[in-house]
Image (cartoon, rainbow, N blue to C red; front, side, top):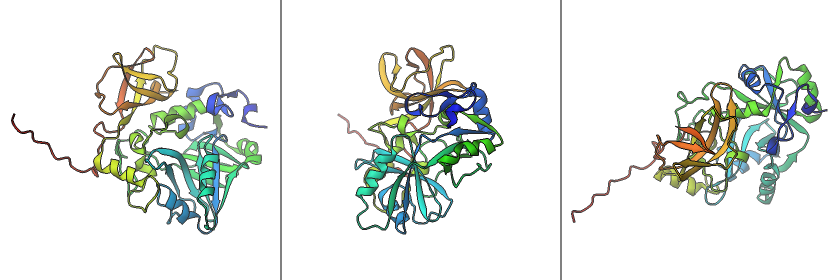
Length: 353
């Protein structure tokens, strides 16, 4: 049996087709999620484990995150970058004292496993793409029955050696959230749900809350050009004072000089329309294309919302439309693309002609 057999379950589509999209009332399910009384089946996400005595120092050397001092049960996240500093694979990270667990979005597990295997050389590590684990997501501090390990989302807290391109932790809409993903044996998933003293929620509720929390999702919001800076992702996934890793120079250059080419926004969409824009829908300022929608959902409080990427120099008060729907863009990433770590730019003085 699976969660598809639970009463009221309606399966999703696309990348989330393997798990329920909802159980009859996405808005009610989202409220239950935030209240800590509902769980979401996230078993279509993928887990790569790295065991062995070299696991922490080795993965530390390959990715954006500082892992050498990671304690058992401590949660963080990392990004594997291309040489140009673009996002290749992002993963949530938690270690149990013997094995490092890397939770990736659906479809990214084999890519991460393959890369790590190629980089193994003489390291004392074993890398496995796991097919024996189920994942349940939720909010709050309640323990999930039969969980063997739990990853707790650091978002939106800014790491001690990182920087924010968006709101401060205190001003962030996700402040105080306690999002988690529990890992448990796949063959015990339904027993765990039976023992859970609450309800189930679907991916529509999970995604709606993710979007209003300004949380990028790798399989949906990231494209081949995406930089961590554009999504304010340095705050939780990039340590700025660790050793060399692929893409580090590009990260440092953009931090120092500022001005990533695009910036993330939260789009408040006109609620009079029933439809939601599809991923990749152009964002227009008049007749000019200034960005694209990356993900959209219907939030329990805000109604239709979307995440998108705009050209950096798009005016913050621009009148926008998406698939004919009027949209108001709320700033996520600072439009000047700079932080307190960016160099001061000297003003160019022009000589009189």
